[in-house]
Length: 137
Image (cartoon, rainbow, N blue to C red; front, side, top):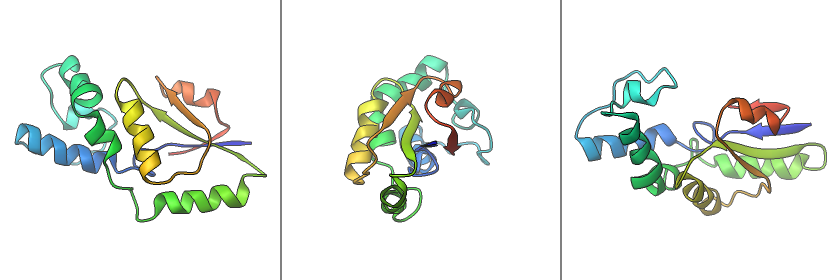
């Protein structure tokens, strides 16, 4: 069995970092509570192109490479689980990434010393199921 693990809001505090960078760049607060998957609902941009440029070009390293772990020692805990069960299960990190968020995400995994060997960067949520039987989100 292959167990997929997503990064954002499981291992990486993407929303926390997005709030900080958005406030700093635009000098306005996101629309709370953040309770949908539509970023533009909570972090308004003038266009989808402006949003994509913000996320995947201009601030990718800050947003995807420099967030804190979602919980203290999240990656250490993941490494422990991986080491304990790697002979019984296959583990893969699966994340929806584009453009510069890919190298930034690899930086995040490197700086946190993630020991998992398999990473899949997908373009859609549906594509996740091509790589795992169970997904931790």
